[in-house]
Length: 137
Image (cartoon, rainbow, N blue to C red; front, side, top):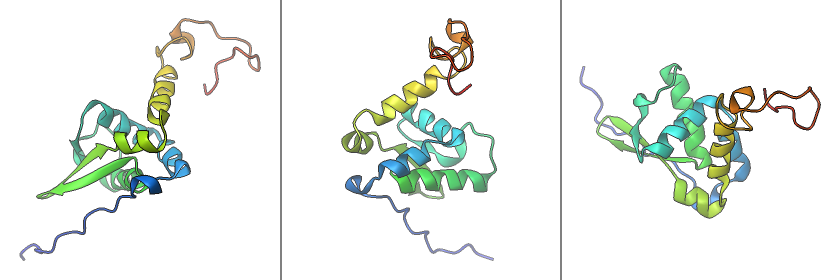
């Protein structure tokens, strides 16, 4: 049986002025989606099936949809592949410094990520509830 010659519709992307802060923050709240964003921050564009995430293809498609519909990424099709790119310029225009701030906070909160990253960051733990206790651990 021959494959259909109909093409999928192009993925929908919000215009820059339609990107909503709450949608962006929601999209950035998931570890898998943050992995995608970090990879795209380092590479200008990447094929969708090549990200270093351990999720089912259908789950990965969902994560791409959330990122795309929130305005965090753009996607384009080439032959039978879909490529993703971070909408850095649009996000910076709409919410200056947001992406850099979120990525920096994520890096600080990883083991060995710096003074605010927990015990591996070089400072001892404080008593729970104190002002110097590590948050999010």
